[in-house]
Length: 283
Image (cartoon, rainbow, N blue to C red):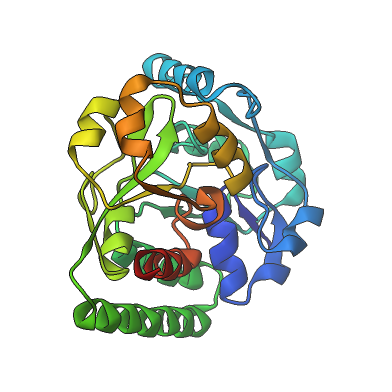
């Protein structure tokens, strides 16, 4: 079986359930596990990640308005790889190959691959996607085992949260210029870690808030976990914040984590993200 993944979370899921050897192509963003670095890249981005955060946000907003996706697919390379299974997503039309582009690509391929589409908003959805990928690549039992192991780790977190001290008020930001409050599964991770998310609710999309609005939430802990950026880039972005209204918030306790690896990707490492948050909350 030949598998191509169009997004990092899918690549991590395939590897976690023992299918890394089936992968013949991945997206330009796939970087984990390290073995995938040697695989052909079948996507590219029209947005330079080195641009300032404000400009990246503007270009992403423009892509939403115009319907011109910033992520492109190298159909020739994909056709040459002749995948039996193609894994895509339908949660975001601009951060990865969207549903319309995926449909167009599939129509251009001969033979037509089996398509597995991921659409998670909560941790339960992510576990369902792991099972779905397992079905798609004939790793059903392995997927069930991974979900069972992750579920046990979740239970451990829930027990610790239930027996711990009063919940810490936590604000998680996934972008700083402008500030976006993390959503989808992130508030759920905060709750598992023993915190109370003061910026968003589980399952809801990320939302833009002004620095003044965020300061009013009065968090005990601010976590900077930027979408698509590692911790080093996040620290640079944090240091560049000059908005006077941000100071009341950022003089509180602030921690930076690798959002690209742990909170942005709806895959197995979300549970590790909750464990990281738990350590931060307890420290």
